[in-house]
Amino acid sequence: MPLARPPTLSPDAAKRLSIASARSDVPPFMVMDVMAAAARLEAAGTHVIHMEVGQPAAPAPTAAIAAARAALASGRLGYTEALGHRSLRARIARYYSERYAVDVDPERVIVTTGSSAGFTLAFLAMFEPGDRVAIAVPGYPPYRHILTALGCVPVPIEVSEQTRWALTAESLIAAHRASPIQGLLVASPANPTGTMLTAAALADLTRSAEDAGIRVISDEIYHGLDYAFAAETAAKLSENAVIINSFSKYFCMTGWRIGWMIAPGPLVRSIERLQQNFAISVPTLAQIAAEAAFDGIAEMEEVKKGYAVNRRMLLERLPAAGLDAFLPADGAFYLYADVSRFSNDSLDFAKRMLEQAAVAATPGVDFDPVNGTKFIRFCYAGSSSDMTDAITRIANWLGG
Ligand SMILES: Cc1ncc(COP(=O)(O)O)c(C=O)c1O
Image 1 (cartoon, protein in one colour):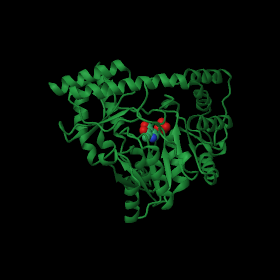
Image 2 (cartoon, helix red, strand yellow):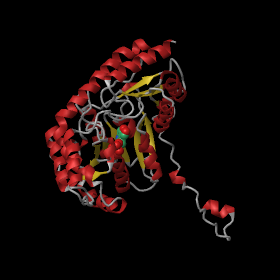
Image 3 (tube, helix red, strand yellow):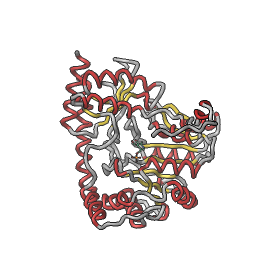
Image 4 (spheres, protein in one colour):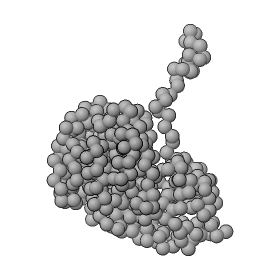
């Protein structure tokens, strides 16, 4: 039964009670809109090849799934400590010594609900409203949208071919001189470009930022997925930097919503208090699975070989299909293709490619409102047969 409106409330007063706050007015994540359009086509019977969403087609490591099954069978799943299961935090710390030969104190490891929650916690713990945080453009859209929703100011720094599409110390310091910056968020491998910073470039950027009093956040979610050279962790370069990572990509666990951060010691208690209040703790089942995921590294390396095959196939065969201008695809599982030969409206290009070729990809405007009109992001984390099919469809579409 509909609720009766209190007779004293005017329609205008009632409307005011349900207005969304100005800070919640963030742009949509357009890739989700492409997904929705693809789903409509699929419902009508079209076989769509999905290259829009940045997620692996492979399942979580077998060991992770087995651990989760055993935990479910054992019955009760309670809260954990807000910072996460101690054994998982210790296992993550051990991963740093195994993978990067760096000692990380498990006390500095914080388990988060995907890296997405890590950003919210980091921004809240590090910045005041009005603080300015530098990010590369093109870049992952939620960086700027979360910062804006929290009252911080994203400072887009345009990157270009000249620096292999990476932020440099010079561009950061120039922006800082123009108007002081409090934070820097850097990602290598990056989304949407897939480009990477060398260890020396990341060290230079981190040192220059910290020398200027700029706090560094390093998004390392695509670590492990590199094809040209290994990614460096900022944990090796500074104990003041905040490292954000996740089980979503390398470990193929997007839907489990689990990630981690490494915070400077003095920030841990603040983040703990935020997490206690915001979430109590991260889902326990996902924490148990994540700890076991580290036993699945050999399996994940096999999955990565599949990405490498897909990457090579696309780089070799897309040019003949008509798309021949890409940014260097060093890591992650993305190809950022320049489609300006065909269109200066990447949203329209993506829509037509979906409707006419049944290949879903993400328009660059999601990542760069200005120059993104010329680019399309393809995710190659799907099966090799899908990639072959996509190349044929794109060739027929652009050629026809
Ligand atoms: C660069 C980057 N950072 C963070 C995320 C968030 O991932 P999650 O919350 O699943 O860890 C994504 C997801 O696509 C991403 O591309």
